[in-house]
Image (cartoon, rainbow, N blue to C red):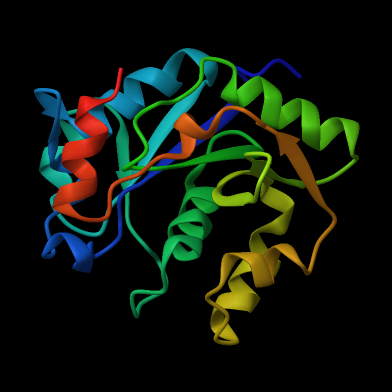
Length: 195
């Protein structure tokens, strides 16, 4: 299966409490909304790009992608966005990206899919050589029901859900820049200075 036979979702549904509640995906990064840049970076690698957002839908639709929102109520975190994306995706594999990590590698989709196939897994998680990066994952739609059950049972932690499955590791050692994100104004300013 070529990488293009994937759906990607940019996860922009968080409340961004450490950023004063600002919608991080709409915040400008080097002059343009961050989520728009991430959508553009991932689009050549996949067949479909979705944006998971629970507010400001019109602004996100302006980026040219379908916008979805959590189907399960209660601000359940990124797993709820992934669950909604699995249900909306046109393709069986879903690639996830947070809306605040702008340095998307051009081979992200291919490497994630290669790891899942090589390790015969329906779930793959990126690893930067020091630790797993749980919001950077590839998951198959056959996991949708299990993910919904996990959320309805009160589960919220991504790594706890991973532990329920054969979870492949995609090696991104030496690629730590890809996983940088900004949770405070100070971190944002530092990230904007990077080459």
